[in-house]
Length: 142
Ligand code: DGP
Image (tube, rainbow, N blue to C red; front, side):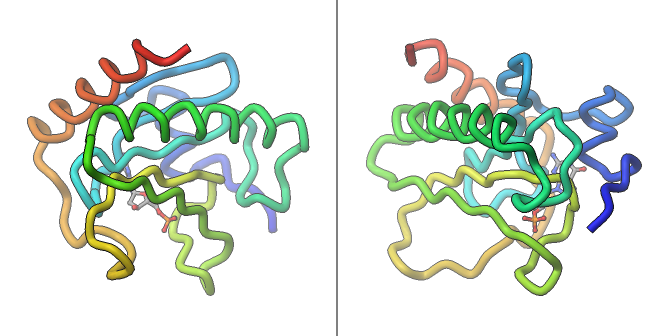
């Protein structure tokens, strides 16, 4: 599938839209999902413009998954007592709605009961609070 550089996450990467950024690396950006499935729901995206896992370069995917692991570790630390779901969707048939590759990192405590996608947008104060919580946990990860 072709990559549309006007997609929402590309616009966040270019600074055209705001986001609650948790961490930026040379190759990735981590920020809070605006419609969280749970408190602390973060998204990790590559800077490389790829719509899905099939189109990204192997090198880009390697860097991305390394950052996914780092954020998942931070999630575990920031939300003790929860498990961590790492979810990634490819294609509208699979439920993907933003066509810039992304991994969801979601603190989860509801066992196998997972309907996906949050229902409503969270308020700014809550997104900011949970971005801060993840940032603090990231600061403790090598
Ligand atoms: P997916 O279905 O895997 O493509 O998930 C896309 C996610 O992106 C969904 O959980 C909601 C989130 N999202 C949509 N628009 C925005 C936005 O403008 N900002 C942020 N931070 N998240 C968004």
